[in-house]
Image (cartoon, rainbow, N blue to C red; front, side, top):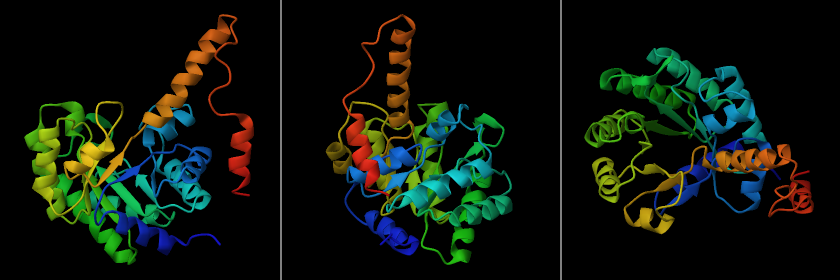
Length: 273
């Protein structure tokens, strides 16, 4: 029997209550099903990974494209799915609210809204408009009556890695506006992560990890509640494909194949039939 959307959402909220969990980011149905098979408890979409799958750069997908992608992920697995919903595909808070309701209809268990300006990715909405947008998203979720986690994220550290104080202040404002989980991709120093966790406590913090340098246990000890990897898994796959293709172009077949056999993949995917 398939897990209901209601059950997925309840499970996802419970994961945020204590401890720390890893939230990997699939980019299509196949990768989502592999991650379910491997035993992860929840998944999150990645705007980057999905765009690359479609041969597009990040932020080039339309909202309609993303809604279809979210629906396909939610229908393909029995795990909760958190939506990378970029900037809500609108500047105006009321339109963000409308769009969040559309995202909820896809079956997601969580939705992330960031503060990059629509059409101007090098700049952010100021704190007042950013908070209004998060407050609108909160109201939209509440109006549906659905148990969906609202993740508020600031992209400030991806623009200025030294703006940790500004990032923390914005997350505190987002928490006050009704966000369930706070997220500032780009934070990496242990003291900064600990400060971020303390500032918004008891609400959970999501940390983005894109490579080696820390462990899940270390982040949990800092008070982090969930860990995502953004486009890192997708990048690993594309990196292997590009490297093998470059050798193929040079006339070598040495890089073909990999550590996972076709037979194993067929066996895993057959379990979802």
